[in-house]
Image (cartoon, rainbow, N blue to C red; front, top):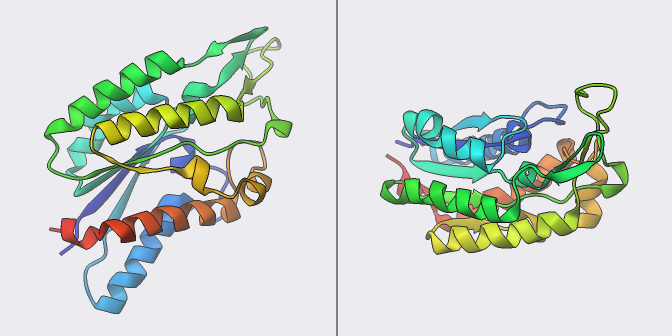
Length: 220
């Protein structure tokens, strides 16, 4: 009997931008259900705890109240890109969570997970289409010029997150490096969120990682 794969993260975990309303979480769930049907076993249940706008600080606070509460057999954490965002209002400000604070926050989160009896998979951030940024989502007022992100910042953040995840003994999915930027970036209608094609690419990478981990050994 299989259990729950809890996925906690941001808007890209939530699946924003996907016309099929599945995101990568739904696609991975569909693939796992198909494999289970072939083997005539119970499929893994995918629980999507993606929340748009969440930073590493938000994830740290939600781990115990939302992720642990659902007693996962596997936990996937996919967040961080919002930390790298700059708010432009009315002038360019610093990042929402600077790199040093983000590192400290992830260390605290991974420390919380030390006593966990389930495996933890960290998924790194995705690239953005800088030509379509900054973007204005629900502007605060007429002076709000939007939010900006840059791939150089995301690459540095990805390296930091990978170091901390590996140090904590977690699996790391290097999404930023494994995605083909020339194919993935054109799927970003608003410069940040993938369409259904982009989520297909992400799901294949995560599914491949789960296959390599032989996740059936973690079932109930």
